[in-house]
Image (cartoon, rainbow, N blue to C red):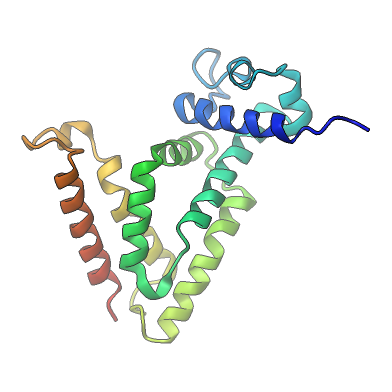
Length: 197
């Protein structure tokens, strides 16, 4: 009977999550521009050959890590079409505590612009739920469900994606608890206005 590889896979996934968030896939660039399989293996304390055995090539591994980070996010912050401001606030908080998720998805959009089936499947139930909320009159029907979700996600991620130069134009620390609370309140109010029927 072969040894149980569960712990090895877990260590590799944890190491890859951090490596890809920090360095991107880097498939089209020579090393050390992107993530390195050697660093992932060293961090996980395993032979790098095991990455290929368990997860395939570096691109496949990257896609899996991105998909898992989105699945973890969806589990931690369930989508609520009937309470988009509440969802927006909870997702804002989660992304503030897990900035690697935004880095991973940003790298994925830049380096893997064609969506994977897992990414599409992550959005499909949200779009269906928004369409259902529109039919019930809970969410405005004047905007398509995909547009509503794009706008809500844009509002949620606006502060994290804003240029550091823009954030620096206010004397207050851009990441102070007071500033984040004010930004969160303004964002949820904007989501409320966007989705009111």
